[in-house]
Image (cartoon, rainbow, N blue to C red):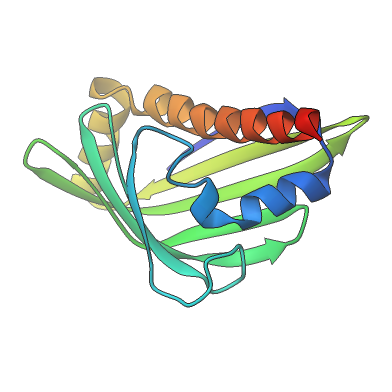
Length: 167
């Protein structure tokens, strides 16, 4: 299992961050050039428990599809995305993983801190252990995921701080 976290400080209120992130179509795909597409499987397109979608992405030569749902929402505090099926491919290998992403919003004085925790669980089989080792040591997967997460957070930071300054 891999657990990674990235965070940024944002000169904004939790309410402003929540309102921005709640417009999923307005930021999720745009937040990283690694994102290819986002397809919704529910009528809700906002951060509500039960919202279902599939995110396709590609980074570091790895193609991924993560189909999942928003499993938990605490407005202005936390959102949890859990994959129902996530498969990442490199060369001719297809590696299923259980993927959880948690966005956490916290106040810190006059600013807010937005964190993104990513958990990847590889299958508890010989193939899963080999896949995890290859991901970490050959593909530099920890660094890829950390960079990807930070890119998303910096996009959100720039968008929100730009909105706040223009108000």
